[in-house]
Image (cartoon, rainbow, N blue to C red; front, top):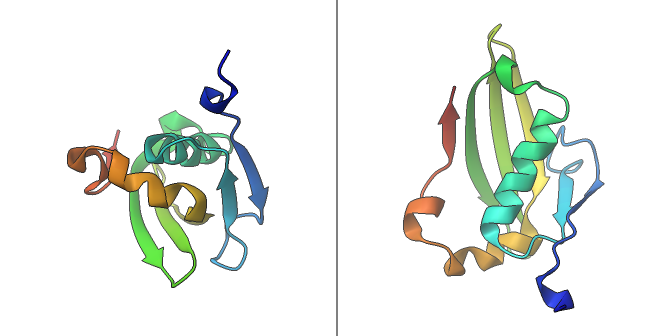
Length: 107
């Protein structure tokens, strides 16, 4: 078995309430896995049936990259969650352009 193909994603850092308290995603083998991990984290405390819309944006600094994800619930509550995506953002060049242009989901 090739150990380099085993993906073990973990969530570290803060609670995601700000850039300073961002949830750090580690272990993603590619950009798509990092994005999927963000959605899994969100769905761990907001049921999928309660999500009306999710919109993401990228905040780039010289040495780090953060994803700001805005979640709108079915009762129009807005939750802002910040992820430290520095580890997997750099793997974006290996993904198709259609996948990475913008991620927005409406249920």
